[in-house]
Length: 213
Length: 266
Image (cartoon, rainbow over all chains, first blue to last red; front, side, top):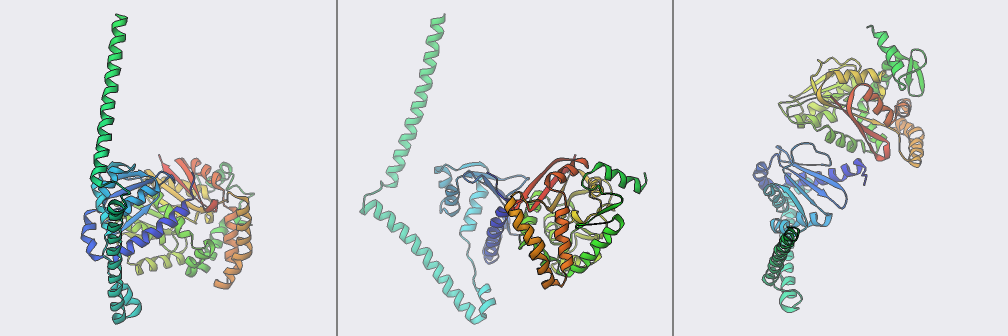
């Protein structure tokens, strides 16, 4: 699939601008960001045949590129949906293990970068004060922060209650421990089947060797 | 070898720069070779103060995206020496200044003093100082040592050069082995319908916008004409190969309206 570099550049420029503006308004993230300077994460979107390189610069900014020729710290490959799920995940480490995403290289900087970007504490006071003045801007920033916090808590609460409903009230899904036990059983069975398969192959080889002797 | 012999050889070796007698193109007009630089200078003297606005008008603002991709392809790293020829108002140089860092160097070069003045002032206003040098020079005779530059970019400038083959050879000379050249230039649309729309825009709408914004329809008409006279993607690729660049390739952007060519000095 041949993509027009200008279109990709437009999307990346918009995303990069948004991320860097958010970073500039989140001073608490600065020190964490310094530790990631030089990190380059390659996100290969297999369904679109695009690779987006996310580089953390020494100037506490993120650079998004469609072409990069240096050392890549971590390469992540997956469909757009899988990679999006990774980007917004609360537990990226678990998602990397349990999803079809392929990872090459060091996962620690990838997880650190993902957590840093998804947990930015944006200080809205400065941009709002620049537009509406100090007094009104301050009040608006307080309400905005309160609204965002309420939204986050509401989303967490809704997710928990939905999980409880599906599990306890509706009995629509099995408990997590039961599910893990099932997956472990499947994994164990798979390994046993593979061992049995190799034993049968070995046995067949011996029989054929004796027959020949 | 004398200079005039060089020019004759260029005319023989390249279809693109070969013109009847000792003339070259200035838009759709054939002019004496020695006059082209002066005429081009006249155009850019006229538009220097509004150059960025002109680029925005000509490209609908997309030139920033084309330049962004060119910078990615350059793969410039900290500590490298970058030459931005026909650097105009310095938007590429500003970006390279960040990439090469304090250990590296960016040279903003242009044949036109008015453009350089605008570029230099703008870079200083943006705080881009310390690792940027400003040099007024001709792309055909680059005043730099052999094998001294890691990366050369020329964006929307090659079509205004009188002898493009000579300029490419000059760039090859100053590049370090392994160094790369990136030529970002208007090119030939790959879609016929797009080409027709583009022609209508370039020759009917653009000069009117130029007249309204800069009271200078002729300069804008020249810019549109010079784009049509510029070699297409494959011809420019061949010219780069003739200049001994290796691994030459190009990427079409926005349906081929613009192409970025890349070559490496072996």
